Length: 472
Image (cartoon, rainbow, N blue to C red):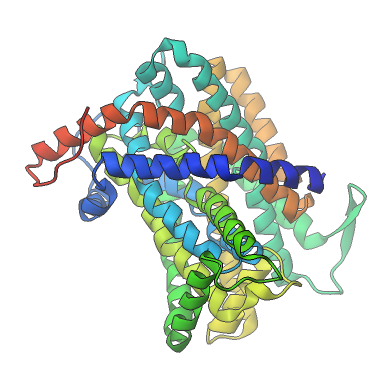
Protein backbone atom coordinates (compact mmCIF):
# COMPACT_ATOMS: atom_id res chain seq x y z
CA UNK A 1 0.00 0.00 0.00
CA UNK A 2 2.85 2.37 0.80
CA UNK A 3 4.27 1.88 -2.70
CA UNK A 4 0.91 2.61 -4.35
CA UNK A 5 0.33 5.72 -2.24
CA UNK A 6 3.87 6.97 -2.95
CA UNK A 7 3.45 6.55 -6.72
CA UNK A 8 0.11 8.40 -6.74
CA UNK A 9 1.57 11.12 -4.50
CA UNK A 10 4.60 11.64 -6.77
CA UNK A 11 2.41 11.73 -9.88
CA UNK A 12 -0.06 14.26 -8.45
CA UNK A 13 2.68 16.47 -7.02
CA UNK A 14 4.58 16.53 -10.29
CA UNK A 15 5.46 19.55 -12.42
CA UNK A 16 1.88 20.31 -13.67
CA UNK A 17 0.35 20.80 -10.22
CA UNK A 18 3.34 22.77 -8.93
CA UNK A 19 3.08 25.05 -11.96
CA UNK A 20 -0.66 25.47 -11.34
CA UNK A 21 -0.26 26.42 -7.67
CA UNK A 22 2.88 28.49 -8.19
CA UNK A 23 1.35 30.10 -11.25
CA UNK A 24 -1.80 31.03 -9.34
CA UNK A 25 0.28 32.68 -6.62
CA UNK A 26 2.37 34.60 -9.17
CA UNK A 27 -0.71 35.62 -11.18
CA UNK A 28 -2.62 36.89 -8.14
CA UNK A 29 0.46 38.64 -6.75
CA UNK A 30 0.91 40.52 -10.03
CA UNK A 31 -2.77 41.29 -10.55
CA UNK A 32 -3.21 42.53 -6.98
CA UNK A 33 0.09 44.47 -7.21
CA UNK A 34 1.74 42.61 -4.35
CA UNK A 35 -1.11 43.05 -1.89
CA UNK A 36 0.58 40.68 0.56
CA UNK A 37 3.72 42.84 0.71
CA UNK A 38 2.15 46.30 0.57
CA UNK A 39 -0.54 45.62 3.14
CA UNK A 40 1.05 43.20 5.60
CA UNK A 41 1.23 45.83 8.35
CA UNK A 42 -2.43 46.73 7.90
CA UNK A 43 -3.36 43.05 7.86
CA UNK A 44 -1.58 42.43 11.17
CA UNK A 45 -3.45 45.38 12.73
CA UNK A 46 -6.77 44.04 11.45
CA UNK A 47 -5.87 40.63 12.86
CA UNK A 48 -6.02 41.79 16.48
CA UNK A 49 -8.80 44.38 16.10
CA UNK A 50 -12.29 43.02 15.54
CA UNK A 51 -14.97 45.06 13.78
CA UNK A 52 -17.65 46.51 16.03
CA UNK A 53 -20.40 45.56 13.61
CA UNK A 54 -20.88 43.02 10.89
CA UNK A 55 -22.77 39.86 10.07
CA UNK A 56 -21.35 36.50 10.98
CA UNK A 57 -21.17 33.74 13.59
CA UNK A 58 -17.76 34.45 15.20
CA UNK A 59 -15.38 37.39 15.53
CA UNK A 60 -12.85 38.08 12.80
CA UNK A 61 -10.07 37.01 15.16
CA UNK A 62 -12.04 33.92 16.13
CA UNK A 63 -12.39 32.96 12.46
CA UNK A 64 -8.63 33.43 12.00
CA UNK A 65 -7.90 31.30 15.08
CA UNK A 66 -10.19 28.58 13.75
CA UNK A 67 -8.27 28.67 10.47
CA UNK A 68 -4.94 28.73 12.33
CA UNK A 69 -6.07 25.85 14.51
CA UNK A 70 -6.36 23.82 11.32
CA UNK A 71 -3.07 25.03 9.81
CA UNK A 72 -0.73 25.23 12.83
CA UNK A 73 -0.31 21.54 13.51
CA UNK A 74 1.89 18.63 12.56
CA UNK A 75 2.85 20.44 9.35
CA UNK A 76 4.88 22.94 11.38
CA UNK A 77 6.69 20.29 13.41
CA UNK A 78 6.54 16.99 11.53
CA UNK A 79 5.85 18.31 8.01
CA UNK A 80 8.95 20.53 7.95
CA UNK A 81 11.05 17.64 9.24
CA UNK A 82 9.79 15.17 6.62
CA UNK A 83 10.23 17.76 3.84
CA UNK A 84 13.87 18.44 4.76
CA UNK A 85 14.62 14.75 5.35
CA UNK A 86 13.23 13.82 1.91
CA UNK A 87 14.26 16.87 -0.13
CA UNK A 88 17.24 18.21 1.78
CA UNK A 89 17.61 21.67 3.39
CA UNK A 90 16.67 23.28 0.06
CA UNK A 91 13.07 22.17 0.63
CA UNK A 92 12.76 24.90 3.27
CA UNK A 93 13.61 27.58 0.68
CA UNK A 94 10.85 26.41 -1.65
CA UNK A 95 8.46 26.18 1.27
CA UNK A 96 9.07 29.90 1.94
CA UNK A 97 8.65 30.87 -1.72
CA UNK A 98 5.37 28.96 -1.85
CA UNK A 99 4.22 30.77 1.30
CA UNK A 100 5.08 34.27 0.02
CA UNK A 101 3.10 33.66 -3.14
CA UNK A 102 0.46 31.77 -1.16
CA UNK A 103 -0.32 34.89 0.88
CA UNK A 104 -1.90 36.44 -2.23
CA UNK A 105 -3.78 33.20 -2.79
CA UNK A 106 -4.97 33.12 0.83
CA UNK A 107 -6.03 36.78 0.60
CA UNK A 108 -8.18 36.00 -2.44
CA UNK A 109 -9.74 33.01 -0.71
CA UNK A 110 -10.75 35.06 2.35
CA UNK A 111 -12.16 37.90 0.25
CA UNK A 112 -14.24 35.65 -1.98
CA UNK A 113 -15.50 33.69 1.02
CA UNK A 114 -17.13 36.84 2.44
CA UNK A 115 -18.20 38.18 -0.95
CA UNK A 116 -20.24 35.10 -1.84
CA UNK A 117 -21.28 33.71 1.54
CA UNK A 118 -24.91 32.92 2.28
CA UNK A 119 -27.11 31.58 5.11
CA UNK A 120 -29.05 28.38 5.50
CA UNK A 121 -32.64 28.04 6.69
CA UNK A 122 -31.45 28.00 10.32
CA UNK A 123 -29.57 31.28 9.93
CA UNK A 124 -26.08 29.74 9.99
CA UNK A 125 -23.47 31.42 7.78
CA UNK A 126 -22.28 29.28 4.87
CA UNK A 127 -19.27 30.05 2.73
CA UNK A 128 -16.18 28.67 1.09
CA UNK A 129 -14.98 27.57 -2.36
CA UNK A 130 -18.19 25.70 -3.21
CA UNK A 131 -20.20 28.94 -2.80
CA UNK A 132 -17.83 31.26 -4.62
CA UNK A 133 -17.56 28.70 -7.41
CA UNK A 134 -21.34 28.32 -7.75
CA UNK A 135 -22.38 31.93 -7.03
CA UNK A 136 -19.36 33.65 -8.51
CA UNK A 137 -18.70 31.55 -11.60
CA UNK A 138 -22.34 30.64 -12.19
CA UNK A 139 -24.65 27.66 -11.75
CA UNK A 140 -23.02 25.98 -14.75
CA UNK A 141 -19.94 25.42 -12.61
CA UNK A 142 -21.78 23.76 -9.74
CA UNK A 143 -20.24 20.43 -10.72
CA UNK A 144 -16.80 21.87 -9.90
CA UNK A 145 -18.09 23.04 -6.51
CA UNK A 146 -19.36 19.54 -5.78
CA UNK A 147 -16.02 18.01 -6.74
CA UNK A 148 -14.27 20.34 -4.29
CA UNK A 149 -16.76 19.46 -1.55
CA UNK A 150 -16.17 15.72 -2.08
CA UNK A 151 -12.39 16.09 -1.92
CA UNK A 152 -12.67 18.44 1.08
CA UNK A 153 -14.76 15.91 2.98
CA UNK A 154 -12.30 13.11 2.23
CA UNK A 155 -9.29 15.28 3.14
CA UNK A 156 -10.76 15.96 6.56
CA UNK A 157 -11.87 12.41 7.18
CA UNK A 158 -8.85 10.47 5.94
CA UNK A 159 -6.01 12.94 5.43
CA UNK A 160 -4.93 16.24 6.87
CA UNK A 161 -7.75 16.46 9.44
CA UNK A 162 -7.53 13.20 11.31
CA UNK A 163 -4.95 10.55 10.51
CA UNK A 164 -1.87 12.75 10.15
CA UNK A 165 -2.67 14.68 13.34
CA UNK A 166 -3.41 11.76 15.66
CA UNK A 167 -0.46 9.85 14.18
CA UNK A 168 1.81 12.79 15.05
CA UNK A 169 0.38 13.05 18.57
CA UNK A 170 0.81 9.36 19.41
CA UNK A 171 4.28 9.22 17.81
CA UNK A 172 5.43 12.14 19.96
CA UNK A 173 3.93 10.67 23.13
CA UNK A 174 5.39 7.26 22.34
CA UNK A 175 8.86 8.73 21.76
CA UNK A 176 8.73 10.47 25.12
CA UNK A 177 7.08 7.91 27.40
CA UNK A 178 8.07 4.54 25.93
CA UNK A 179 11.23 2.47 26.30
CA UNK A 180 12.21 -1.15 25.72
CA UNK A 181 10.27 -2.21 28.83
CA UNK A 182 6.97 -0.60 27.82
CA UNK A 183 4.09 -3.05 27.50
CA UNK A 184 2.76 -3.65 23.99
CA UNK A 185 -0.56 -4.76 22.54
CA UNK A 186 -1.26 -6.61 19.31
CA UNK A 187 -3.58 -4.58 17.04
CA UNK A 188 -4.25 -5.29 13.34
CA UNK A 189 -1.53 -7.93 13.51
CA UNK A 190 1.17 -5.48 14.69
CA UNK A 191 2.59 -4.59 18.09
CA UNK A 192 1.88 -1.13 19.54
CA UNK A 193 2.87 0.31 22.90
CA UNK A 194 0.29 0.89 25.59
CA UNK A 195 1.21 4.60 25.36
CA UNK A 196 0.08 4.74 21.74
CA UNK A 197 -3.22 3.04 22.55
CA UNK A 198 -4.04 5.11 25.66
CA UNK A 199 -3.09 8.49 24.15
CA UNK A 200 -5.03 7.68 21.00
CA UNK A 201 -8.15 6.88 23.03
CA UNK A 202 -7.85 10.04 25.18
CA UNK A 203 -7.49 12.33 22.15
CA UNK A 204 -10.39 10.60 20.40
CA UNK A 205 -12.71 11.13 23.38
CA UNK A 206 -11.67 14.77 23.90
CA UNK A 207 -12.12 15.57 20.21
CA UNK A 208 -15.56 13.99 20.19
CA UNK A 209 -16.68 16.10 23.17
CA UNK A 210 -15.61 19.38 21.52
CA UNK A 211 -17.00 18.51 18.08
CA UNK A 212 -20.51 18.29 19.49
CA UNK A 213 -20.45 22.05 20.21
CA UNK A 214 -19.93 23.06 16.56
CA UNK A 215 -18.14 26.18 15.28
CA UNK A 216 -18.72 28.24 18.44
CA UNK A 217 -17.13 25.55 20.63
CA UNK A 218 -14.24 25.01 18.20
CA UNK A 219 -13.64 28.78 17.95
CA UNK A 220 -13.55 29.24 21.74
CA UNK A 221 -11.07 26.41 22.22
CA UNK A 222 -8.93 27.69 19.33
CA UNK A 223 -8.89 31.31 20.59
CA UNK A 224 -7.49 30.07 23.90
CA UNK A 225 -5.11 27.31 22.81
CA UNK A 226 -3.65 28.57 19.51
CA UNK A 227 -2.09 31.90 20.67
CA UNK A 228 -0.73 30.37 23.89
CA UNK A 229 0.84 27.27 22.35
CA UNK A 230 2.12 29.14 19.26
CA UNK A 231 3.89 31.63 21.54
CA UNK A 232 5.37 28.82 23.68
CA UNK A 233 6.64 26.93 20.61
CA UNK A 234 8.09 30.06 18.99
CA UNK A 235 9.88 30.91 22.22
CA UNK A 236 11.51 27.46 22.34
CA UNK A 237 12.71 27.66 18.73
CA UNK A 238 13.99 31.23 19.19
CA UNK A 239 16.08 30.02 22.11
CA UNK A 240 17.62 27.37 19.82
CA UNK A 241 18.37 29.96 17.12
CA UNK A 242 19.80 32.64 19.42
CA UNK A 243 21.99 30.15 21.32
CA UNK A 244 23.44 28.95 17.99
CA UNK A 245 23.77 32.24 16.08
CA UNK A 246 27.24 31.36 14.84
CA UNK A 247 25.80 28.33 13.01
CA UNK A 248 23.05 30.29 11.20
CA UNK A 249 25.18 31.42 8.18
CA UNK A 250 26.21 27.83 7.45
CA UNK A 251 22.61 26.65 7.79
CA UNK A 252 21.38 29.34 5.38
CA UNK A 253 24.13 28.32 2.97
CA UNK A 254 22.90 24.72 3.09
CA UNK A 255 19.31 25.84 2.49
CA UNK A 256 20.15 28.06 -0.51
CA UNK A 257 22.63 25.57 -1.91
CA UNK A 258 20.19 22.71 -1.61
CA UNK A 259 17.38 24.73 -3.23
CA UNK A 260 19.40 25.24 -6.42
CA UNK A 261 21.20 21.91 -6.51
CA UNK A 262 24.55 23.34 -5.46
CA UNK A 263 24.80 20.80 -2.66
CA UNK A 264 23.35 17.48 -3.85
CA UNK A 265 22.82 14.83 -1.19
CA UNK A 266 22.52 11.06 -1.11
CA UNK A 267 24.04 10.82 -4.59
CA UNK A 268 21.22 12.76 -6.24
CA UNK A 269 21.89 14.51 -9.55
CA UNK A 270 21.78 18.29 -9.95
CA UNK A 271 18.33 18.36 -11.56
CA UNK A 272 17.06 15.63 -9.27
CA UNK A 273 18.11 17.57 -6.19
CA UNK A 274 16.36 20.77 -7.32
CA UNK A 275 13.20 18.91 -8.33
CA UNK A 276 13.06 16.88 -5.12
CA UNK A 277 13.66 19.94 -2.92
CA UNK A 278 10.99 21.94 -4.76
CA UNK A 279 8.48 19.09 -4.75
CA UNK A 280 8.80 18.30 -1.05
CA UNK A 281 9.02 21.96 -0.02
CA UNK A 282 5.95 23.04 -1.96
CA UNK A 283 3.90 19.99 -0.99
CA UNK A 284 4.70 20.29 2.72
CA UNK A 285 4.36 24.08 2.59
CA UNK A 286 0.86 23.79 1.23
CA UNK A 287 0.09 21.07 3.77
CA UNK A 288 1.23 23.46 6.50
CA UNK A 289 -0.39 26.77 5.47
CA UNK A 290 -3.12 25.35 3.16
CA UNK A 291 -2.87 28.28 0.72
CA UNK A 292 -4.78 27.26 -2.40
CA UNK A 293 -6.52 24.29 -0.80
CA UNK A 294 -9.71 26.24 -0.10
CA UNK A 295 -9.96 25.25 3.56
CA UNK A 296 -9.35 28.61 5.27
CA UNK A 297 -12.19 30.44 3.43
CA UNK A 298 -14.68 28.03 4.99
CA UNK A 299 -13.72 29.43 8.41
CA UNK A 300 -13.31 33.00 7.11
CA UNK A 301 -16.89 33.02 5.85
CA UNK A 302 -18.17 32.83 9.44
CA UNK A 303 -16.40 36.07 10.47
CA UNK A 304 -18.37 39.09 11.68
CA UNK A 305 -17.33 41.67 9.11
CA UNK A 306 -18.78 44.11 6.60
CA UNK A 307 -15.75 44.17 4.29
CA UNK A 308 -14.69 41.23 2.14
CA UNK A 309 -11.24 42.75 1.48
CA UNK A 310 -10.67 43.35 5.19
CA UNK A 311 -11.26 39.70 5.98
CA UNK A 312 -9.05 38.76 3.05
CA UNK A 313 -6.19 40.65 4.70
CA UNK A 314 -6.87 38.97 8.03
CA UNK A 315 -6.98 35.56 6.37
CA UNK A 316 -3.63 35.99 4.64
CA UNK A 317 -1.88 36.62 7.98
CA UNK A 318 -2.47 32.94 8.70
CA UNK A 319 0.07 31.97 6.03
CA UNK A 320 2.54 34.55 7.32
CA UNK A 321 2.31 33.25 10.90
CA UNK A 322 2.22 29.59 9.95
CA UNK A 323 4.99 29.28 7.38
CA UNK A 324 7.05 32.47 7.22
CA UNK A 325 7.38 32.55 11.01
CA UNK A 326 6.86 29.11 12.58
CA UNK A 327 8.00 26.78 9.77
CA UNK A 328 11.09 28.89 9.04
CA UNK A 329 12.22 28.72 12.66
CA UNK A 330 11.54 24.97 12.86
CA UNK A 331 13.48 24.39 9.63
CA UNK A 332 16.46 26.43 10.81
CA UNK A 333 16.59 24.47 14.07
CA UNK A 334 16.55 21.16 12.14
CA UNK A 335 19.26 22.24 9.68
CA UNK A 336 21.46 23.64 12.47
CA UNK A 337 21.24 20.38 14.41
CA UNK A 338 21.82 18.16 11.36
CA UNK A 339 19.11 15.79 12.59
CA UNK A 340 17.54 15.70 9.11
CA UNK A 341 20.51 13.71 7.78
CA UNK A 342 20.17 10.88 10.32
CA UNK A 343 18.47 7.98 8.45
CA UNK A 344 17.45 6.36 11.75
CA UNK A 345 15.14 9.30 12.56
CA UNK A 346 11.67 9.75 11.06
CA UNK A 347 8.90 12.34 11.42
CA UNK A 348 8.66 13.98 14.82
CA UNK A 349 11.87 12.27 15.99
CA UNK A 350 13.84 14.58 13.67
CA UNK A 351 12.43 17.69 15.33
CA UNK A 352 12.84 16.16 18.78
CA UNK A 353 16.52 15.56 18.04
CA UNK A 354 16.84 19.21 16.97
CA UNK A 355 15.27 20.36 20.26
CA UNK A 356 17.56 18.07 22.25
CA UNK A 357 20.56 19.49 20.40
CA UNK A 358 19.59 23.15 20.58
CA UNK A 359 17.80 23.82 23.88
CA UNK A 360 19.98 24.32 26.99
CA UNK A 361 17.79 21.92 28.94
CA UNK A 362 17.91 18.23 29.88
CA UNK A 363 16.97 15.93 27.01
CA UNK A 364 13.76 14.78 28.69
CA UNK A 365 12.63 18.38 29.25
CA UNK A 366 13.24 19.25 25.58
CA UNK A 367 11.29 16.23 24.37
CA UNK A 368 8.45 17.00 26.79
CA UNK A 369 8.11 20.61 25.55
CA UNK A 370 7.98 19.53 21.91
CA UNK A 371 5.54 16.73 22.68
CA UNK A 372 3.23 19.16 24.50
CA UNK A 373 3.30 21.69 21.65
CA UNK A 374 2.66 19.01 19.04
CA UNK A 375 -0.25 17.52 20.98
CA UNK A 376 -2.05 20.87 21.32
CA UNK A 377 -1.27 21.96 17.75
CA UNK A 378 -2.46 18.69 16.27
CA UNK A 379 -5.53 18.54 18.50
CA UNK A 380 -6.74 21.99 17.37
CA UNK A 381 -6.11 20.95 13.76
CA UNK A 382 -8.41 17.98 14.28
CA UNK A 383 -11.10 20.38 15.51
CA UNK A 384 -10.65 22.91 12.71
CA UNK A 385 -10.79 20.31 9.96
CA UNK A 386 -13.88 18.70 11.41
CA UNK A 387 -15.66 22.00 10.77
CA UNK A 388 -14.26 22.25 7.25
CA UNK A 389 -15.34 18.73 6.32
CA UNK A 390 -18.74 19.18 7.90
CA UNK A 391 -19.33 22.33 5.81
CA UNK A 392 -18.31 20.41 2.68
CA UNK A 393 -20.72 17.65 3.57
CA UNK A 394 -23.51 20.16 4.24
CA UNK A 395 -23.03 21.61 0.75
CA UNK A 396 -23.46 18.15 -0.76
CA UNK A 397 -26.38 16.89 1.35
CA UNK A 398 -27.88 19.94 3.03
CA UNK A 399 -28.33 20.54 6.77
CA UNK A 400 -29.24 17.00 7.73
CA UNK A 401 -28.91 16.00 11.40
CA UNK A 402 -28.65 12.33 10.43
CA UNK A 403 -25.83 12.98 7.94
CA UNK A 404 -24.00 15.14 10.50
CA UNK A 405 -24.20 12.40 13.12
CA UNK A 406 -22.86 9.81 10.70
CA UNK A 407 -20.06 12.20 9.71
CA UNK A 408 -19.07 12.78 13.35
CA UNK A 409 -19.02 9.02 13.94
CA UNK A 410 -16.78 8.36 10.91
CA UNK A 411 -14.54 11.33 11.77
CA UNK A 412 -14.03 10.07 15.32
CA UNK A 413 -13.41 6.53 14.00
CA UNK A 414 -10.70 7.89 11.67
CA UNK A 415 -9.02 9.55 14.67
CA UNK A 416 -9.25 6.25 16.54
CA UNK A 417 -7.44 4.19 13.86
CA UNK A 418 -4.92 6.89 12.87
CA UNK A 419 -2.17 5.82 15.29
CA UNK A 420 -1.94 2.38 13.68
CA UNK A 421 -0.96 3.49 10.16
CA UNK A 422 2.62 4.03 8.97
CA UNK A 423 4.13 7.53 8.74
CA UNK A 424 4.84 7.15 5.01
CA UNK A 425 1.29 6.17 4.06
CA UNK A 426 -0.23 8.79 6.37
CA UNK A 427 1.61 11.70 4.78
CA UNK A 428 1.21 10.30 1.28
CA UNK A 429 -2.58 10.09 1.66
CA UNK A 430 -2.69 13.64 3.02
CA UNK A 431 -0.65 14.95 0.07
CA UNK A 432 -2.98 13.23 -2.40
CA UNK A 433 -6.15 14.79 -0.96
CA UNK A 434 -4.44 18.20 -0.76
CA UNK A 435 -3.69 18.03 -4.45
CA UNK A 436 -7.23 17.00 -5.35
CA UNK A 437 -8.68 19.91 -3.33
CA UNK A 438 -6.30 22.45 -4.83
CA UNK A 439 -7.22 21.95 -8.49
CA UNK A 440 -10.89 23.14 -8.44
CA UNK A 441 -10.15 25.88 -5.89
CA UNK A 442 -7.18 27.36 -7.77
CA UNK A 443 -9.21 27.28 -10.98
CA UNK A 444 -11.92 29.37 -9.30
CA UNK A 445 -9.42 31.85 -7.81
CA UNK A 446 -7.94 32.54 -11.23
CA UNK A 447 -11.32 32.90 -12.95
CA UNK A 448 -12.67 35.21 -10.20
CA UNK A 449 -9.50 37.31 -9.93
CA UNK A 450 -11.20 40.29 -11.59
CA UNK A 451 -13.76 40.47 -8.77
CA UNK A 452 -10.97 40.12 -6.21
CA UNK A 453 -9.00 42.97 -7.79
CA UNK A 454 -11.97 45.35 -7.98
CA UNK A 455 -13.03 44.62 -4.38
CA UNK A 456 -9.46 45.22 -3.23
CA UNK A 457 -9.23 48.51 -5.12
CA UNK A 458 -12.52 49.73 -3.66
CA UNK A 459 -11.49 48.86 -0.09
CA UNK A 460 -8.11 50.57 -0.36
CA UNK A 461 -9.66 53.68 -1.88
CA UNK A 462 -12.08 53.91 1.05
CA UNK A 463 -9.12 53.79 3.40
CA UNK A 464 -7.48 56.54 1.31
CA UNK A 465 -4.23 54.68 1.08
CA UNK A 466 -1.84 55.48 -1.78
CA UNK A 467 -1.85 51.89 -3.03
CA UNK A 468 -3.17 50.98 -6.47
CA UNK A 469 -4.16 47.48 -7.49
CA UNK A 470 -5.22 46.10 -10.81
CA UNK A 471 -8.87 45.88 -11.83
CA UNK A 472 -10.73 44.41 -14.73
